[in-house]
Length: 461
Image 1 (tube, rainbow, N blue to C red):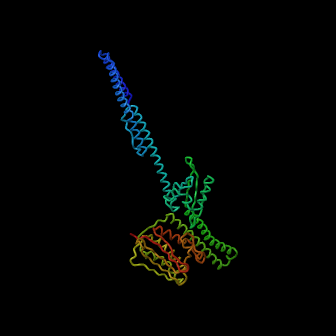
Image 2 (spheres, rainbow, N blue to C red):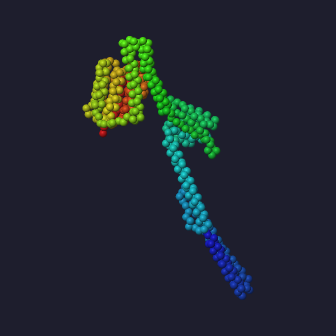
Image 3 (cartoon, one colour):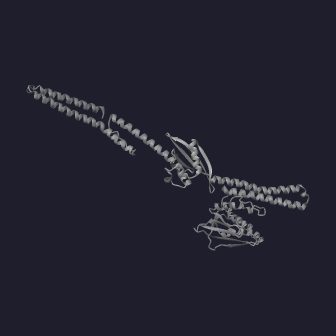
């Protein structure tokens, strides 16, 4: 209620009071009433009752006008406390209460802005935790898990409904992480550890203690280092294998040069034989460098594919022609079986011919005399790919070598002789070329019973 309205009611009350006093005075001055005490008493009591009723009415009106906006304000505050933050008061009052309503609405708007800002930050943090590749757990001071992100659930193989509220040891179930947590808990300092879980899996755990509002907690980060370790192993094996492959021809060339320096150069026949051997070693290293460059270009995508619809028979023809003489010398028969209704495949012919040549060359090289090689092709089960097969009756591949046979420079122990020449890059090149065609290459083999190489190519639409 405004001051003007309050003063109006007060003035009205005073006017009524004066009027009542005037009426009472005129009533008491009457001759009939002056001689009667009862009349005087009745007049005074009537005036007092009238003034009391008037005071109660005006007081009630003032209290109602004051309490009404306060009551509505209390209702609004209860709505906001219940979660209805969009509720607001409209300034239809006057003066003092309008200012109160304005200040309250400003406070409400600031509160909504802060809540929206906190919700946005919480949403962003939730997105980071949800999509980050590392596993995250938050453990309270008592050792119970309070938060776990999807990456941690995948690594630990459990759901958040199982993990939340359980002890850290019960959730992680790896003694290395439990011991790391115990060390961090005892020292109150950051600790990290990389460890092997078995089956070729490597993890790294990092635990950081923190204090939040006087409460102790621990932030646990889990990282899967399996791929990193695998890449380190590949790099280490690559350097080792490259050194191995280069050391043999270099040592052979050094021996040739030293022999020539010791006097063999004066014997024309001997010198010619040794120089021929040096040329062969240079050719081996040249082939190795060229295949390394080719493999590097394929892996980096610098060798674009010129895909076209091609018959599988056309892809096989040139590699068969090139390998035919070599197979005849070893008395190896090559059989080709292609269904007449085989659909065309989407391929870059020179690249797939290179794949087939590598597979045929390996089949002939590791198949003993009077052996047998069989080339077939058929539709896959989903009718979307053509699967080509190169099967031999050779020496086979040891089970330990099968998973790594397509790695660069990797060769089974049987192949690590100069009698079986090769750089160990052919199958690696074949794998990258087939995968560049959106296909897949794999092998099945039994040691001493031969090998079967498969690769798939998409059907031309």
